[in-house]
Length: 100
Ligand SMILES: [Zn+2]
Image 1: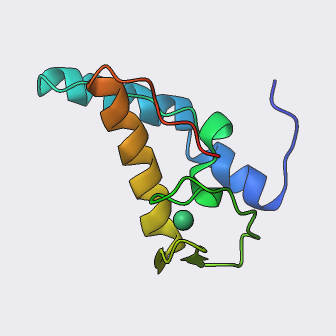
Image 2: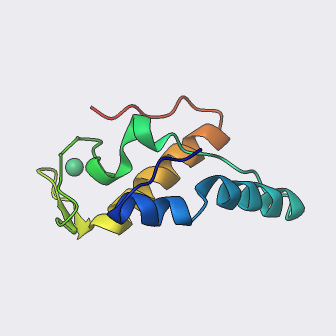
Image 3: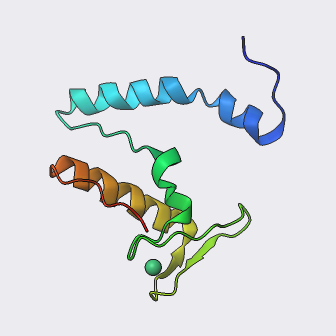
């Protein structure tokens, strides 16, 4: 049984992430596409630079990604690129790039 959660945790639980992943997996198979689940706890896409792989801790309120390498973009776009880079590395049979 799930303990009563409050605030953001409760909202995340309400989205039923496991069911959403199963639906995505099913739809990908139906479309003859490959489903790749990115280990976000391991690669931390919202705190990783998509261009150089540097890690930079950000608060949730920080919505802009800015890196020493010159990478400047919205945080969500940067996170999506980190996820895509990881997934493409897996699909190509490459070892996923480890962020520094
Ligand atoms: Zn960078």
